[in-house]
Image (tube, rainbow, N blue to C red; front, top):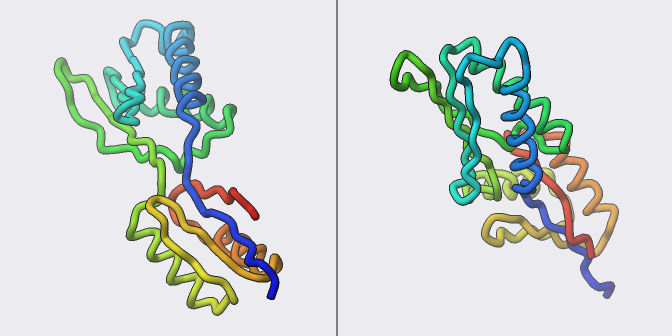
Length: 165
């Protein structure tokens, strides 16, 4: 019998690239004529994996989010990796909004992906290992079919496929 092939389904974000994008966005906020003196700011907390945005109005906050989005896309970070919270009113009629950086696959979503793969009757085995899924099969064609199936579905987070063996 042939040795099983495998790959991992993961959701990882390069925090250094996110940090670079946030720094570029903060620099653009200081230099761009329409955002220069608005008092808008953006900060990254690497340990908490959160981006905090402060702006004087909802309109300016949306512009800052657009600026940050363009910097993230340029650095190959999927915008689905950010989960924006509700805009909260802060002191002095300003707005604060926090985005959580999604890193890893939650247990509920991992079980959902596992169930959907099993329901499609692929000849593969799927194991949930913490924040990733490992897919095994004797056939590379079956593994490629699973990758195509998972890519076709939208799970709300960016998924990568690595450790192909």
